[in-house]
Every structure is written in structure tokens, then in C-alpha cells.
Length: 127
View 1 (cartoon, one colour):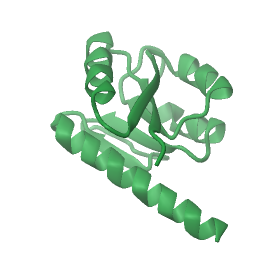
View 2 (spheres, rainbow, N blue to C red; view 1 turned 180 degrees about the vertical axis):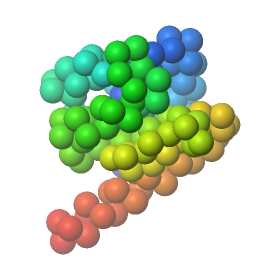
View 3 (cartoon, rainbow, N blue to C red; view 1 turned 60 degrees about the horizontal axis):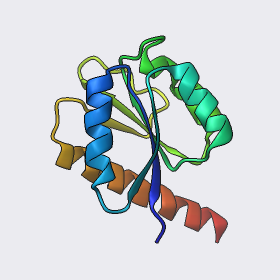
């Protein structure tokens, strides 16, 4: 089974770096990019396919929830995860809401579950 290609989109450089380092050590995940702004994410998605896009609610240029539909248009097959405080989030077009206050283990479990579900759905629709 191939690695799950992940793009991180978060305006907080310290959290983005920490999550990138943790995902780099996680079997089955391959971090293909990390950016701070929505415009950078959309530009990245034009040139590089991904399986998962983790978008933080607070970006430097727009709220993460405001860019979800544009991410979906740019990469329709990807699992889109909004990384936010559940009380403040408008998950809109996101496939999964990741609790920003949750543990890394919970985040990875949610991502794995969402990817498995998306792949099963794709396999059924291709059968």
C-alpha cells in the first residue's frame, strides 16, 4: 500500500513544523508540503497531487473554512481535514474536523480513518 501524501496548511509556523515532524515519523504518511497561506496551498495543489490536505482554521490570509471549497475544486479526490477548535469551526466542505486541542494520536487516528473511508468509497465507485 502506498503512502498517504499530506499537505499541511497552517499560519502558525511552530505548530506546522511540529505537526510536520510528527507526521514524518508516522508510518504510512508522507508529508509532501507545508504552507502558511491559502494562496500557497492552491498553488501547490495545481502542481502536486495529494491524498490529504490538513487546513488550519486560522491562516495568514483567510479563515481556513473559507478556502475549503477552493481546495476541494483543486483536488477533488483528497480528504480535506479542517484543524480547528470544534466550538469555533465552520467545517463546511471538510471531510473531517480535527480537534486542534486533541492529541496527536487522535489526529492521526482520524486521518487514517478518513483516508480508509475515502479509499473504500473510491474502490466501490470504480467497481
